[in-house]
Image (cartoon, rainbow, N blue to C red; front, side, top):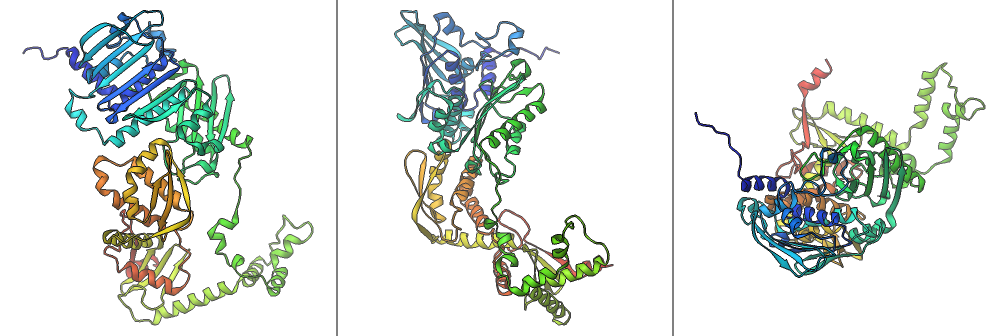
Length: 611
């Protein structure tokens, strides 16, 4: 048998390495920007054309390279950072593997110009698919100017799987944002198709956050500063009102390197418990400084995943630091009963107090027990059953009494009414805990989930309007300003035509800001931003083949947003109307996203329940 194992050629090995490191144009941007940072630059420029497919260019004023170093930089595992194995455990620079330029050059046409400060001339090197085409002296400014042209030109399959220019450019802006946040003292500029997108002067972190993410963050930043023997934490978190329903405005940096870590993210979110809604995400830009020996940054080709020596210790310190910052700036949960719809529906709030009610209450068992001297922690057990019965009879408001009479009347009807197949026929409908309707049918009883029924009804109504092109829009007297991060603004701009078809009138209003001039007529006031946040979050996770399904997803989100009020069904007429509308739908049994709307309980099952 002949030998079957052989070494890969350098050409194939380089392409495999490139597949790990350079997955899209944004991957190359990250590597090139990090190299520019490591070169000690104070000014870095990024030039993009055709979402990076045609050109990626990074120009810096760093230390530059000698002719020999310039040539060596394109070799695999060529690095100035690692000399022996111990260096792997004390890494503080960004690029250190020596894979970046070799990987980029394996899948693109690269031209490098570089010059050291004390050199009279610079060096120009041209490389195509790892093959050096030219190396010669040239005139160039101090630092390095690298151009990456026609990315993946020699790997058609990889180029074919790139997404739209909008999506790819958004990923580039993501990488640019992370590097620029990590190094606020360095000036950054970004051009896209000859239009300048960012011009960031070197400064402090707060200035950099506002310059990158928008002026709306300036008044919502809370500083975090904690120093311990093991971990130093610094940066900014957002006030609770700055939390959004979209991910992406959360940034962790370990020793100035951007990382993703769900465990540490949970530590921050947990510190906001009670301050923000459960489906909201707090804003934060946090820097964790730790001994490099305690963290392994070399666990993934993108270097965005790390391993800590003690995860739980990091979690505890971070959680405490965020809580401390929130407490130090007097940010604490407040109770506002006026905004709670459940409390607003209570009869004690809605019905006026009368002299008779007050007199009956003062005669009550609990009133006398708790207002009597030295009785606050003592409740007499003697004849307690009789006392609680007395309390119950006094506490009944007219509304409760009417509800009891209605239940008794309904129970009598259930015995004498003829069985029918029409769900909800007559008045044999019960509202259960404000969230479900129960009604009888011929074979037993039906339980209907109110909010899900409303979702199905609203979805079919909106779908009909969409197909007819007749979705009404309510113009706002005062347009609402809606500011987004640069990445999210790109996505929303792409979705404006679809939003217009569901009743939104939105126009760009300056960089990364939009003016909401009209909204769907049925949308409750104050919900505009929540709906748009959900739309942006949906677009972030949209697959390439989902553009055709975008309209349907928008309608589903709108239907869900319009069906959250369950307090409009107190009257039997409105309950019957909901049931009638539900069973007029083409698919009444399920919500648009597949959840069950109602269930049937047969008489036999009821008999079994009662033995």
